[in-house]
Length: 252
Image 1: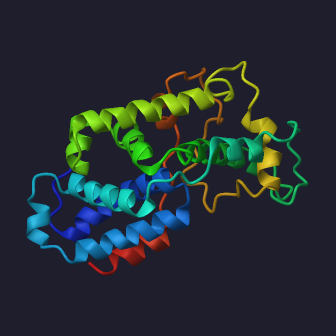
Image 2: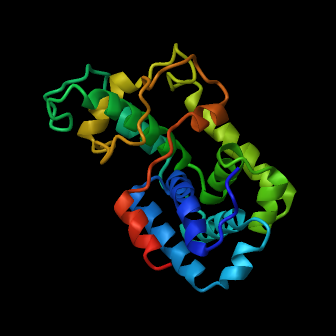
């Protein structure tokens, strides 16, 4: 077990990568995740260092600050709809992967990276179809591992209200993915290999800037995952760019 951080810089060194991944899960865009993280570090800079470090669970405190800020700033409306997601990815017939496509760069090694990036981007976009408060419940409990009572206390709402949000989130995600996604049911029609060229042409998915957060195993390793929580927990966390990480730490 690592020793507790002795300075705010040590705390942020440990937690910024996790908070960046959390922000990406919530907003679905690296640029927005970086913006929310910068706002968080600005808030932290105004806090009493010793009070933050000795409040019992400073990492949980930072997560709570981030969660409340994002819920407030993202508003009540979803980023997009399930219908619009279908229009992007399922409006055309599947087609084989074409390495000559401008997004592939005639590079066979990109196929593995792009399939993982599509899987992660697509499933994160499904979360974006949920209202932010509903989305937040799924991310906090099914991805970050907080119990409903812990998450409700963090957000300052009743546990019963939080559980309603969580149930709604799980049902809407499952209802969308269950008849479509190959990763949920191998009989389903929507496969990453069949949709990759459509996604590239639509600008829905772009080559990742780094392969550091892409697993070595194939994107479809393992059997179908009917539990949506397990499916999402199997996604690789988006890695925070090193330059951004260093820049945010420079102020501490």
